[in-house]
Length: 203
Image (cartoon, rainbow, N blue to C red; front, side, top):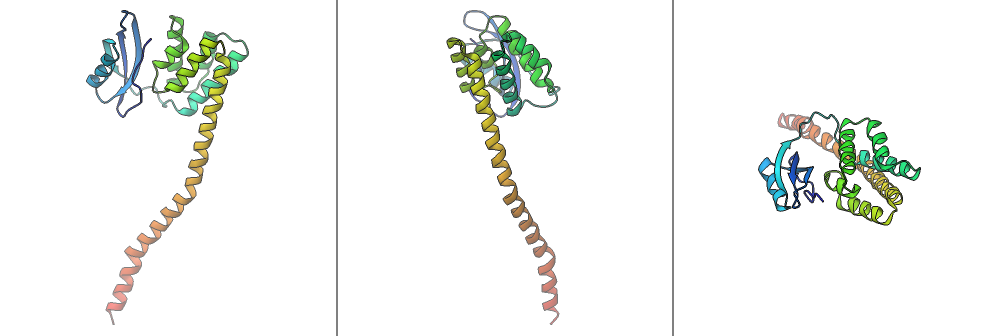
């Protein structure tokens, strides 16, 4: 099973290829400041690094939390309707409007097709799927309730996004008030006070 960086850190995204302790070829991606740091992270995880390449920025939009929530909901809906996992990935990936999401999902699908569990495939994408997500997917696969766990994950992510949206909306008004007050204060300091100073100095 391939593992990568535990948490996303500032830096670039690196696509890598290597061998695990059993000699199996594995691939994934991680975030690191430099290629040397990326290789060090991988070696610490027991991965024999064969290739590390910095990902170019040519995929347009970034993958957002909203993208992941939408994908999780779509995958859950299709699996509950009886659509096979690989086919569900095909439909979701090819129907997505974000090329970066399409690429990522097709990579996950390819890993599953080669024999990795869905949780293992997701763990190779730690920038988008955290430990909680992957552990719940693993539990769903083990217990035969993957569709149900996906539904719960989708609901959880949707609620988190809704809460973040409310917080952002709640902050807009006070931020606007502070900005307005700052502008008014600046105008007074720059224009009004000097004018009064000149006025009183004439007496």
